[in-house]
Amino acid sequence: MDSSRLVDYAKTILLVIVIAFMLVSQAETLYSNLFVLSSIVAPVALFFLLIPLLDLLIVKILDLSYGEYVLLTFTTTARNSEASLAVAATAFPGTLIH
Image (tube, rainbow, N blue to C red):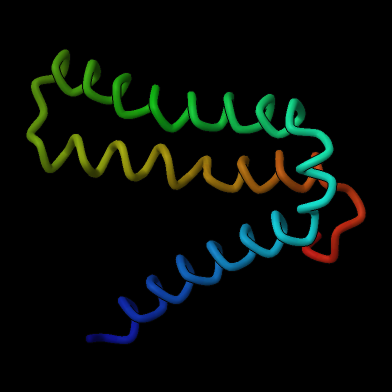
């Protein structure tokens, strides 16, 4: 495996670890405020469900290949994944993750 691929895997794993630590550090708050959690999870989940559908529509209109569809979907979701971290950081002020 080349080094750039290793770095890509490491970035993904570290991002998952950061998100997990954010949630674990606020577990007590999450359990006492499940409504807040659902109000955060719903828009983020909706975003990651709607992007592939919107991309599929764009691909059909522009008559792009499946590979181009995958590239478009990965690009649009990856570019906005940091927004999910911003939502989580805003929802859990005072954590060490900031």
